[in-house]
Length: 355
Ligand code: DAH
Image (cartoon, rainbow, N blue to C red; front, side, top):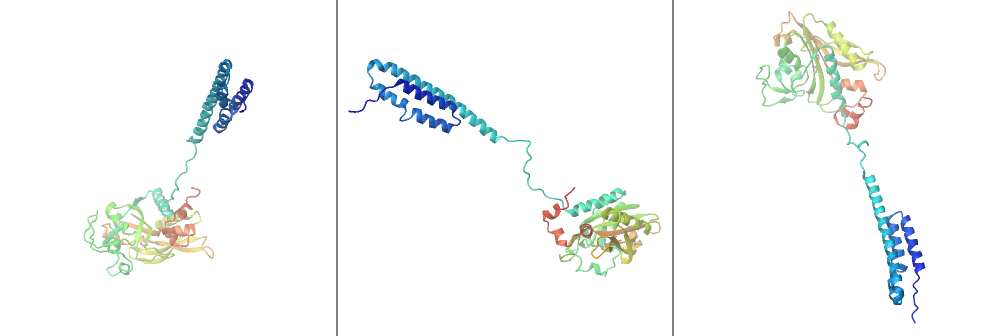
């Protein structure tokens, strides 16, 4: 004989109510599903009720069926309610997690840094502008005439020779000032702007020019074939070497601080007469403070004034040129030119600190 399963309404009601109680306390969908499996899945009183009720005598079937139906509906309702609630909670949690906080700092792409040389040239230009001078910018591909002839370099001057100068074949000067018919060179210095400024701007003249210059040098710790200079020229009535010295000292202080001074040593340049090498007093020089060469200068040669159509009887002037790389090396104690030309952004970034 097969054992008769009994229909026990009280036990079934208890079991379903227990299930409903656990449903109400469920904290996530996973747990909810497990409760459903236990209280309404295979082996549960609810799942087995249909089979048992089917075997009951007709007079008991109806009440038993009604009770089972009600318990199923109660269980289903409690389950549906809880499921909706848990889904909503899960959705809000997900939305909160995905929320974008507009006030958070963004993860920027790495930033570059300006090259210290560009900044130095701006500082130098600011210095001249603060004294009321103008800033000029000459061409890098320059007429040989401006680079040499107008500056009183004789036709056989050694500086013209190929080992120093990049000559550019097949090009002829066609200049804003109307000059045509010279060979072209990559300018070997910024001094051609002396003649250019005199011709295009006339006198009185107070002009500075910073820019790139080119020489056939190999790159090593102290040389590079492309480097930067600043040229300054002042032409007016009654200018003397005292004005030159005063301007140089002011520039030295602007670049190197209040203790900086300059001194002049007699020298020779074709475009100035008299000419001088200019030294800078350098407190941080290796092996103790001392003088260190910084640039060249002098009184504008009357021949330069004449070649620009300016009367040297009435006007006089001074000029000087300093190397920008050299200024930067001295100012920041950099020992190798390679650092300046290699373009490693970490090098430039060091100069941005504290700005
Ligand atoms: N042009 C010269 C050079 O490249 C520097 C220089 C010397 C400029 C004397 C001047 C000057 O204006 O008067 O070496």
